[in-house]
Image 1 (cartoon, helix red, strand yellow):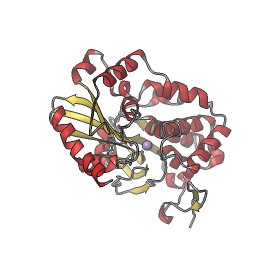
Image 2: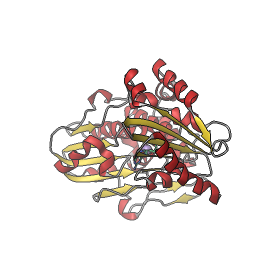
Image 3: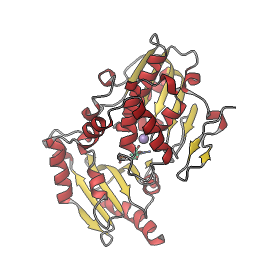
Length: 337
Ligand code: 5GP
Ligand code: MN
């Protein structure tokens, strides 16, 4: 039995991976020759970095493999990653193995879910506490800050190229908000350090993929902040971008990156909610919390999921219905405090 050691915040070695999952990517591949990789709908930095990092890693291991990445449109901010231009939506093709990264429910695969009907074996590598698993080889470690951190742990370190390291580094900075979220552990920093030792240009990746915003992104951010409302004595904040605004500016979901994070850092706020109108009476909900609220519980209550400090779901109804329903659950937690 092989064990994978992790180090907790206090520096103690802990064994977080159950024995059956304590395996390496190289073993998981087995004799598969045609491999697909996919991740969640509206891919973020972690999901994209994980998919492209694993693609590069597998191709470095054996250039004769077929490794195809299927994702919904990836934000242009990640275009420095190797293989970015190869990503497409799944339409057809048979694979012996499919890696599902940063997600473990079929529903969250969006349009790529049909891929699962055309593969012989599914390996899921995820770090969401609310994960249900896909019923194949599910490898879920909620303590990991990012799917990319988890991937690093099960990769053969010697075979990690600079290109793979850049993908994994990008994923980690996005899911930790550049190492400042509470999910960042000593182990996360050690993994990031090891990736830097591979030659990753961290300043460029952090600036270009995380901080640089397009003019449109800044306009939408300004609009969302301007229209935000606070409630619960200033402990909650909510804002919304309507379908009409999205259409008018020809904006995509990626253009809204970072808005909920800016709402979260409003002084006195415990819980930030950002709504995007998907269609009439349907909203994508994005939540962030500071300390008092476990937003993954709130999201899970409404059929979504995520992490304690960052979670989301999709809800039906008017803006006020959605906010009322969410705030009821949030206030319950604030009252219990
Ligand atoms: P975001 O607010 O950035 O879209 O998502 C925050 C976190 O919650 C991410 O880890 C994301 O995967 C998760 N999440 C967002 N929306 C959903 C959803 O509808 N269902 C589930 N299960 N997780 C979600
Ligand atoms: Mn993630």
